[in-house]
Amino acid sequence: MSSRFVTVDRDTPMLLPPSLQDWLPEGHLAHFVVETVALLPLHGFQVNTRGTGNAQMPPSMMLSLLIYNYAVGRMSSRQIEKATYEDVASRYICGGSAHPDHDTICAFRVQNADLFQESFVKVLEYARELGVLTKRGGVSTDGTKIGANASKHAAVSHGRAVETIAELEREVQTLMALAEQADREARPETLKIPDEIARREKRLAKLQQAKAVIEERHATRLTQKQQEYEAKMAERKSRRDRGERMGGHDPKPPATTPEATDQYNFTDPESRIMKAGNGEHFEQSYNAQAAVDVEGSMLVLGAYVTDAPNDKQQLVAAVASVVAVRELTHVLADTGYFSAEAVATVESNGGPTAYVAVEKTGHHRTVAELLAVPEPETPATGPIDRDAMRRRLRTAAGRRAYKKRKETVEPVFGIIKATMGFRQFLLRGMRKVALEWSLVTLAYNFRRLARLISAATTHGHGDLALQAA
Image (tube, rainbow, N blue to C red; front, top):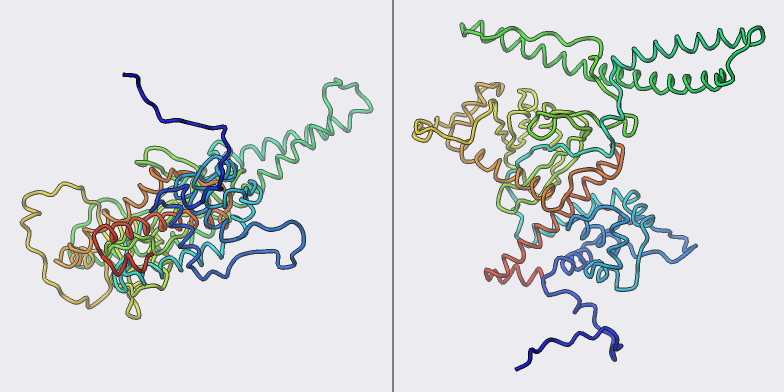
């Protein structure tokens, strides 16, 4: 008995044109992206309203193409252009025949920051209408370091800049003196004095700019550091007045001049050297922040980018980034976010309750900790300092709420970095980097919403399935 194989015929032309709908299986992410974008009442598209020049690519198609490709880990405009020829899902989104080039894709991405933010809000409103996102609830906030499109080796420290500026100024003076003697004494033909002076003066200008920027940044941070120093000294004084023993030395006042290690990057000046990974190495990065729903959806409700190397001043900004699609009841954050002033600001005027860790804790829990009786719920009567926040986290409500922090926001960063493959920004500068992070979190929300709707349909939630259809 001879073997039988499926016939593969690549030469016979099709008698009838195929339907694009048949290119992808039902429930594919590309179907969901196209259908959802078509449902969103978007107005922020940047288009050529004069109608001159070549025909434009449909904005909804371009938005769908970007969202889908970012969701599957394809961020480069050249890779996306290539995908419109080689990737079935991307060809389906473009209708099979449209192939926007990488310049068009890149220009659309850079020019439509408002559109991405509008889409971010509309998708969350859609999730709320479907019942996927609750109308009241909390968020968990955290930050992650995302590499800048710049090498840390293309940077200069303040100390090195000062030394090199002095050295170059001396060399320029020496060359100027040689130029004055050029008519009286013969010089080697290899020494072109005007070219050497111009080269050094060009480098001097760049270094002086770098030095000025570093000093300006330090002056901006100095006020904040001085406030932190005074707050720490006031807290230590208060504890001493209560008779508590204080360990360690008093904190040192902030330096009035930049540290020798403060750096400036020539490729992307707005990025910073930051601790990365487990904190044992440094990378040229941005600090990407996200506020994630803790009521089951794990959708990103707020996102922004900062150049701050840590999260000390980010609690207020993180809460402010949450879009107004739900009533925010509480916010969870790790120890890097705590300050009494930030907590007071967040909770003022009926704001959400903050549960912010004040000390690092391991994953392991001792038997004594498991058996510990929660502290009684007592309303705060004064500023929420470290001791008051510690007591709040030990109550039953505090334990129950804070338990959700790690199991919500950290998996989101894991999906964005590992599954979607987004570990480095392609664009440069704070404005463009913020735009790209909003696109990344928008693509993540599309992935997550598609999964939530699919799960609801599978488990027989008819109303949700009907609305999603």
